[in-house]
Length: 253
Image (cartoon, rainbow, N blue to C red; front, side):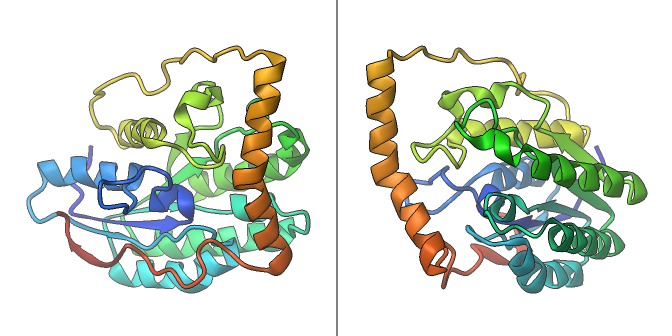
């Protein structure tokens, strides 16, 4: 593994760390876990996390990319676009153009760029198969840019382990603490770190009776899906008025 002395994380809720909560209520997440591991081997290791939940790719580009590039970190991670993909009005041409700009800008400023092949939702979320053409197009752009910019790619899409509900928060959209731990290990492995556990070791998927599944779906719809739809209809986002949790490239602590 390269001797990285600094890291900046760019993206949305996936990178902010939803829903891996610290005792004080703040988010931890895979990016913090990666930084913690790198900092353990490098005194003075600096880390910034600019990611904010709910951000669309336009907002990530406008609010984070140039800021991250100006920090000129040794290592930068980029993950974004899925909030756009999930919206019915997603403009894939505009999305892919902004992804190209973001990755090109970050690659010009950092020694190493880490990109993600997004988690496949189609086996886990009912109705998600309709998103697959968009997801495949996003994956194709990531794969292409990884080659042209010699980026490190973390392939989460090919792993079946994320089909398990045991890795997801009750909202079914964000990873829980164990899910983030596995993404962190996958990222570190892609960077060349020695393994600490098998991040893609399968987990059992519980079989629910139809009645229990229906009751769980009803609770989820009222608690999580309803508010999410309401925000979409009113043009609001869970990230409105939120600021990055680590906006400066400071020594990790």
